[in-house]
Image 1: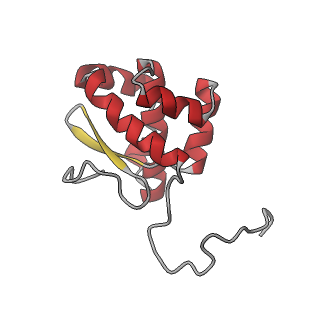
Image 2: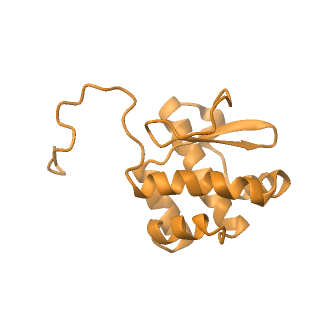
Amino acid sequence: MSDGQSNEPDARGEVTLSLGGTDYVLRPTFEACLAIEKQIGRSLLHIAAEADDQRLTVQDMSIVAAEFIRAYGKEQNALSIIGVKAENIAPLIFEEGVIGVAPRLAIVLIGAITGGAKPAKGGNDDAGELKAATE
């Protein structure tokens, strides 16, 4: 979870989203993006465009938020948020106000289609180099 001080994405594409009085960190990982595409049934590019145009349904918004919250929880090994479910996030989005949540989701989705989560630690000498899938 975040201290809520910044509403701007960090180097990993993370965005903070306030729901029900709690600040959640949305982390756009590859795995989370695949899960979002599978559940919503559209490409990430299409979902990001819909988010930017504020055309996502509350259900779709809850899927996006839940997957990115879980991705952050997995990275932090935070069991309390790894189990977040979209059906529990949807009412929180409604209570927070769709108009306030939609832009936060658009920011993280646009970040995802332009590169997604980056490693937290620097020093990767192989940055930009393609690796075989078996390595």
